[in-house]
Length: 153
Length: 153
DNA sequence: ATGAGTGCAAAGGCTTTGCATTAGG
DNA sequence: CCTAATGCAAAGCCTTTGCACTCAT
Image (cartoon, rainbow over all chains, first blue to last red; front, side):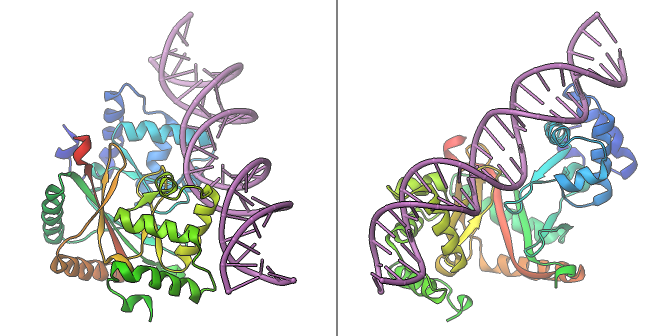
């Protein structure tokens, strides 16, 4: 039941999963929160606040921020910091599986990307090793590809 | 003479290198800029604005931001985005060599870390492959270890 | 009814910008 | 001298917060 036991939740189960996670911290799965989660599920990539608001018409910006914080506390959403402009939000890896991001240095667009498990494992082992050497307890890693996206080339 | 031909500049050469890079974009190597670069050289890790100001007494915050922007345009300094709090700045990899960051999720401290070239190469090849598949022109990658630092454990 | 959730507007906090002054070439 | 650089203060911009209202239970 812990976060780590879930590897990849099916689309149809997401609503139920989110409702459960919210319930565990005494929060409701309101329509505003539902539409935010829907937007993130559909997008399949980290969305900025403006993008989220486009998909959740009528929701106040402040409510979006507040709901995203609640969803973050519930372990359903993660805040992604890519550049210094807008923060972006995505579903947690419990729901989407482990992945990384391609960040366009021209337009700032962010897309998901996955690499082979074999390389992930080798990388994690190497990071664990060097982190330990410096007395650092590694929780996880973050990896971004920086470059120019299809539409900006 | 281009940035990519430099792999790792010796400490003693840094000042000269910076002066040259600044000159190429018509900027001077002033005392304020010198003290910022000195702070970054000594730190050997990304520094936040408050940290930089501690090491450059008398320099106005606005001047620090402006100078860091100039140094960034000169290709000497890179802005590092780790969390949503303060931006951090470090010397470019032309001066420090390729490396990654360990970010403490408790106190926000950031330290440099390096992994074996063999793994870097394998990783780059894999990233290049998946990026190309999505029509994305990879320039470079960013990799962070997230966890808890020595003093926060 | 009763407390969580929401919208609107104001406040916060990091960063940038305007403008007068200073300094380097 | 003349332009770049600096300090101070004000403005900007994303994000958070206060408060009254609404909605679901």
